[in-house]
Length: 236
Image (cartoon, rainbow, N blue to C red; front, side, top):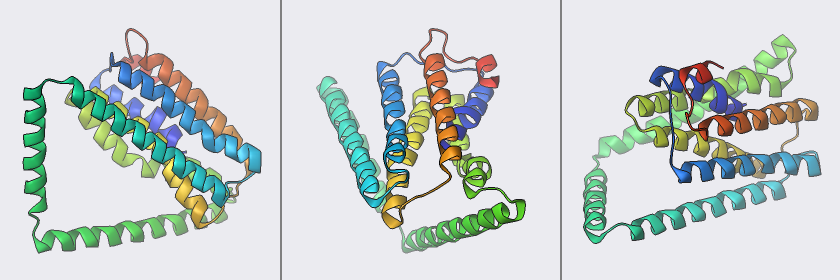
């Protein structure tokens, strides 16, 4: 549900506010294909086992680790392609940023721990409320997750992507979409399956999975076209 929201409602609203988006980067197009490939892995595992077991969770985490390694290799290749002056400039900026961020007061640590506590508390409240809502409405839990919870958990992506597009950082906005879908499909489901094997309504799961792949291919077709995605496409 979160992947569907990211690929339709969230990026659609962000592009609509930014009046369109056009991407020429080959890296973005390559990562779009990787995203679709990785998003299909949990579906295949569910088809094979009718659920996501702890072994499936390990597989999904391994896929996430391999994807991270490929990203680091790509970054290393990029850094080695630039000239020495640019490399020194990036190194000095990174070193300054790290040294500045490490000088954090004790109060900031307290705020961080408080926010972590609020995050877990909010997650518990959201889960229990969604479960009670599914009981009151007589809906399957997966349906409540697809419609209500998915949109709610995708709101931070909406804020970030809108700001990125308005400031002309389109690649960053798209990277956020790809990262969200890949994280949801690997590390989120993987850790969840490790904690407790995931079983659900298979009909609803495969129906929503089919729509997710359909929206992903549609998004890829639009984003890789010559004119990109205009506001009319975003409305669609």
